[in-house]
Every structure is written in C-alpha cells, then in structure tokens.
Image 1 (cartoon, rainbow, N blue to C red):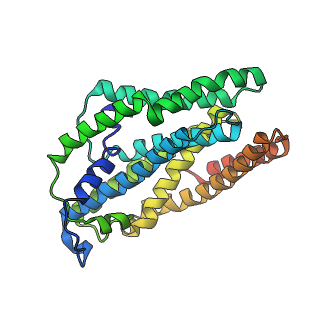
Image 2: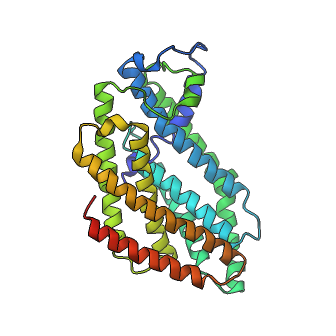
Length: 313
C-alpha cells in the first residue's frame, strides 16, 4: 500500500460534508449533463461515501464492545477493520493528496495493531489467557473510538481537509443529490477511461490475491481466513463496479470474460463465507464446529479445483 495515499479518500467525507453546505438547495434537473467536473465530483463521492460508512462502522463497533466480549464479537470487529483497510486499498488510488508521511504511517499502524490484537485473541482457547487478552483490546478500542488517538486522527484529517478543499472546484452536486450518489451517470470520456483503468487494476489485484489463496491448504485458521476475506472483498468490489457501470465493459471483450469467471468464483466465495458465519455462532456458544469445518474444507477444495480448471480470470 502507498502510505502517502492511504487516507486520501477517508478525508472526502469531511470534504463533502463541508462542501454540501455551500451549494444550492435546488437539485440539477440532469446530473449527467453537468460535464466532466460533475463526473469528477461524483467519482470522488463514490469512494468517500463508502470509506465514510466503513470508518463509522468501525468506530461504532469499537465504541460498543462489551467488557466481556466473546469470540464472535471479536471476529465481527476484526472483519470491520479488514473491510475498512480493503476499502482504503481500493479507493486510495483515486484523487491522492500529499500529506505528512509520519502521521499516515501511525494511522496505518493503528489499523494493523487492532487487526493483530483481534486475530491473536481469536486463537486463544484457555479461559485465563482470554481474560488476560481483553484489556489490551478494550484499551485499543477506547483510544480509537474516543481517546487521544481519535482526537489526533480527527485533527489531522481536518488539516488535510483544509489543504485539499483549497484545490477543489466548487461542487455542482447538492446535498440531496449527494445522499443518492451510488453511481456515476453517463460518464464523460475522461472519467470513463479513468474508471475503466481502475476496474482493470482492481481486477489484477483480485486475481493476484486469488492466486495466492490457492496455496492455502486450509482456511479455518485466523490468518488463512483473513486472506480469504480480503480476496472475497476485492472480488465483491470489482463486481459492484461492473453492476453500477455496465457500459465500462461493453467494448472490452476480455474484461467481460474475466468478470464472468470472477462472478462464478465470487458466488463460491460467498457460499463459504456463509458457512463461516454459521461457524462463528457455534464457536460463540462453545459448541463444536467440526461438521462445518469439514464442510468448509470440502467446499474450499472444490473451489480451488474449479478455479484451476477455469483458467485465469
């Protein structure tokens, strides 16, 4: 990950919230007719909206962690942190801004620290070790959701916001339109080309991770599951782009074929993920997961065989 870019889109939520207050209350009659500037604004909002939602989801999860949190609760928070990290990796390539490297490294380390603490916790089985591990996680949660680290992060993001806001054109989308933005309407050529290239880059990243995942003999351990989840998330985001912007692939036969294969692979990943969710519930209730473990491994083996047989997407 390019740490110099890592929080560029996380700041977009701050930028948009501030910008929307300054625009007219009247909604444009045709968003798609507003030209390339509108495309750029909407493109920024696409990433900012998702980063903002993922960030607040993590913040809320950390703030509401019970003192005697259980395995399923720890795994849920860990997945939220992983999702935020993956959103950042996906969208930091859009509208980068230069910022202080030390601060970015610090925030990046904080995210990885939380993922590491929760991953280590998920490996514990001894009751005394579980009890001993909780304070460090709760301390991390408190700092990230309401302590000094949150204060430092907020102040830093605000400073980036002020810097970046001076370089942005006046927004043409009002707050009502912003609330609905989940797509880019009839892109102008420059924006369409940019998003097309972005989709292909994301597809390459997904392909690389899926290839690495083939090396996993098992996926029930925490580290293995993290690799699986990260691949699954990237696949979902590529397919989301295809669903939102079908015109991006209309003149790219190779990309269409790749996405068709990826869709089949993603369906298999989602089925395995559903089994993981069932497994988490059993473990949270201290019940045996051996039957589900065998089912997960069987499906994983079949998925790997299918992926090898289908060729590269």
